[in-house]
Image 1 (tube, rainbow, N blue to C red):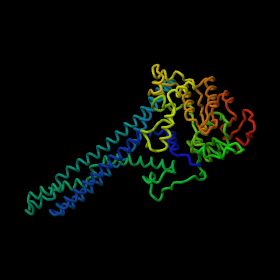
Image 2: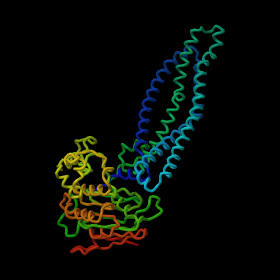
Image 3: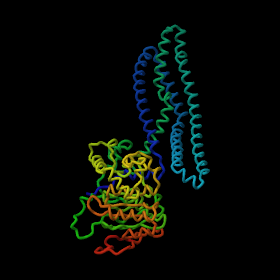
Image 4: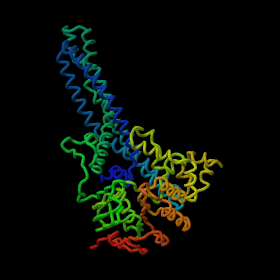
Length: 534
């Protein structure tokens, strides 16, 4: 069974590339949208009821006064919009500038040690001050615009107090109406004018609300452009019905896009087939930079058999990491088709250490997620079972296998069982080398058929590197009973002895060459791995 690789990671990775600190922004905009929408809806309902009630009273007293209210409220609303419309743009820019300033502080906090090592404090301080100054300048403009709007609205509300008296005074002095009618008409006038002035009274909130709506609309539009296979229920939020693209099944690769398909290892072709079964297939792959100005890889065709391990090398900027991202479904720029198994595991140069215990670090991403997902679904049941099948002793043995025998004991103050269940900030507790060894421990837990590594041993010495690759070859057997196949990116000459073939990306020209690293029996390497070049 072949299915399209889920497109959600495409969006997340694209947002990462553009340094969009979306979490805080989305939370603020959604909170503003929901709270103001509810408040404004209740205000409108109350206004309509109040307006109908007092309009009947005022029309029975003096229709001319009701007409004057309509004209006065219309003029007031018009001038309010003209004076205050600049607030919509300023509030939008305020959200953008404040979020950029917060993101810069987070970026500095996460990279403070690197900045200190290279003496970049002055540069970062100057850049932070520049962004903070932009926030202050925008807030100053908002204050000026709010002051002008408040001057007008204050004057408007003072005129309200004398307008009914000016209109009714001639009739009172001529004896046509009594003084009690004036009081009654003034009260009705105030209610009706307040109801008709709802935009004037709420304009500051409306301006901020519209700025949030614009940002949410642009965010939804970006989601739909990057993820055209979203369900119609999600797509109808911000897009006209006629423009909704129906959900698609597997289709030929688009002219500008990389199609990643994954297949189930248990439903692949029969094991008695005489020809080697490919585990990774790439057809007519072409990768470009995000601005499409440079071709990283072109005309790449690969058919990698089970048990054949590939090393990808080349100069910096040749597209090595981009190729791995394309296999993961994270690189959108280019075209071609990639077929890979569903159980594939990616090891980046800097592994991710989620919040949780040392057990969670080893089981990730097979940790129990019952607090997040519905426990009745099969996915969570499988993940929970995967976590429950490993005892503390099993995990301690895995730590020993990856040269971290004392880690649990250190975390548990001498008690390894306690340490395996201790919650720490592991990304800051462990060195990069320890994090990379821990990532190899995850492989022993998850047992994928295909492992893709992006300089995953860069922080290890040669001896530790050899042990990790030996562990992959000797101990890692997937759930299907096949030895794991791995694809590595690296520069060290020592990596050559752990791989069967080498893919050399040449001189940033977009072309590649394949070099057999050792003879293989009964296997035609040209049928296993090939590259079509112009």
